[in-house]
Amino acid sequence: MSRAAGRRSECPLACTLDLIGDKWTLLVIRDLMCGKHSFKAFTQSPERIATNILTNRLERLVDHGIVDRYVNEDHAGRYTYELTEKGRSLFPILESIAEWGLENIQGTVQRMRPKT
Amino acid sequence: MSRAAGRRSECPLACTLDLIGDKWTLLVIRDLMCGKHSFKAFTQSPERIATNILTNRLERLVDHGIVDRYVNEDHAGRYTYELTEKGRSLFPILESIAEWGLENIQGTVQRMRPKT
Image (cartoon, rainbow over all chains, first blue to last red; front, top):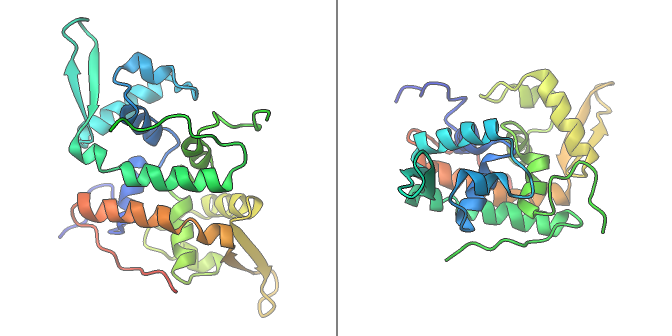
């Protein structure tokens, strides 16, 4: 198989980090898992993601089949965002990172819980 | 407890991403887990990390107690790097990310195995 464009190696860790290896993407996934579905709701999370970063990350997640975007019929021009099955399969990654933080970083508190 | 400097929130996911949320840090941790211990060895991994990025990431990992750095007595001025216990506790994070990649990104191949 030829090397995929833009890929740094065949390593599954490196390739996944090409997609989610930044400070913001997994926070948007966290918000989606915890029941947030609108652009505005994402911007209101405590980390205060900048709107240009949020726009970029949502586009990338939609492009990679991790998030579905629907036109919100009640509010023309607004969208509703939902995790796809592929997106929901990121849950073990979020869980392992959050567990490490709770164990190793003083003052961290788990306030949000995924909606089941 | 007062908010720690530079922290975006109390969320354990966000705080851990403040530390490892980039495209390179976990690749250095991967290399250490797979038996690489020198600056030169890290630069020879297939992703070809730039030396200025590698220097920055190693300093941050040492500062946070994730990596220990020893003077290499055989080669003056060179260092040997090793994961601390805290660093080794990142293994479940690497494992969950690599598993997701193998499952979801075509053409990824697991070549490196952690040394036990």
